[in-house]
Length: 221
Image (cartoon, rainbow, N blue to C red):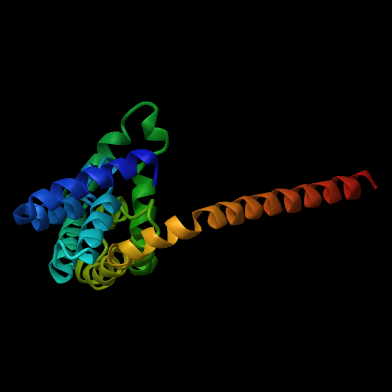
């Protein structure tokens, strides 16, 4: 996550803490729009996952309600993207195939290949893509566009959503629950941690230079 993402988490934490009545609804819609095309291009779901889990770990929000809000939003968002692709994907493919430049890449033959791919490997593609980060936002829509069976989509997408979001929920809850101990540890061992990090970086640089020097010698021979 970038510094802008950390700022977003900080701002969302402050908002959710001040508006607990709306917190679960905000988390639900954050997880929902994180997976609905085209909003998934702009909404970073990790901000909502970590913010909700941190507040649950700190005792501000209920962990079960946070998880249910995030799981429900993510599952419903993926299903919405699937049906958007199912209803509009083929027509969009056909229109784009007529465009002068785009048509070289987006052709109806490509659509048929996509249908064949999802017929053979679509279930596993849906499951693994939901856990791979960059592909998670577009795969449900592609599954609908290329006509993956809906019940198959449900069976493989639903557990993948729960597993993928749970990773962030567990990490955020752990840090939120041990925030005081982590702060105390950093205050006591901050200097030692900084030296250890510097030593690790120096060791990596030395090893990389050694490997690079050895490769140059081997090539010169």
